[in-house]
Amino acid sequence: MRKILFICLAMLVPTLASAWGQKGHDVVAYIAEKHLSKRTLKRVTEVLDGNSLVYVANWMDNASHTDEYAYTKTWHYVNVDPDEGSYNNSTKATSGDVVTAITGIVDRIKSGTLTAEQERAELMMLIHLVGDMHCPMHAGMKSDRGGNGTKVKYFGKQRNLHSVWDSEIVESAHRWSYSEWQQQVDRASRKEQKAIAQGRPNDWIEETVLLARDIYATSSTGENLSYDYVAHYAPVVEQQLLKGGIRLATILEELY
Image 1 (tube, rainbow, N blue to C red):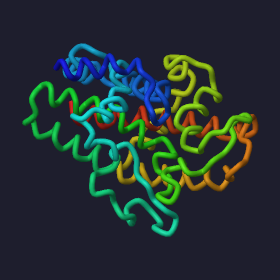
Image 2: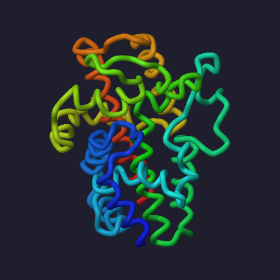
Image 3: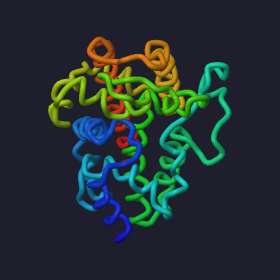
């Protein structure tokens, strides 16, 4: 328990790579909270030792840089090159990826064999990884390490495509708090929500892979990405955060 609390305090320190940045993960977690039944939310809060989903949403980015959880470093993403076609046809990382990690966590929680501390850690990872799965550059190409090798300018500053999509584009799209994000984008009809919730993680990642390819096609090396780029992709950011939140809630309802 002390180790988990220490890592929670470490969340005040900036991380090296965080899909959606802290804001995006908070948005996904808060949308999920708003879609949980009272019974499920009560149980999830108990497992999280009284904390909210938002409170722990960024825990894993820091945990993955500790010795105890170093084995999870590759769990945040998948890499799929165009010649592989799809995630399901791609060569998988032997150390695991975001799809196999989510599937494994769900199975372990369902087994009922975890201690309270183990379940808490697994649940915190799950909350984070569902967000990661919906960040386009966390389903980018192997050949440029998920956009890290594609050098671009963002409003005139040197960046890589991965860093642009990890956090900067979220803040450029809207200067909202995580609760304002939820209020503004979480407006899908019940029919639309049901459609978003359909499928499983190996289906959802294929959407992100295709989205990443569209982004590569419109984000040339050396290009200065600015206002037109943000205007074009802001609706995509909104859509992906909403999907992440609704799908996280779907998984948690099944578990708890």
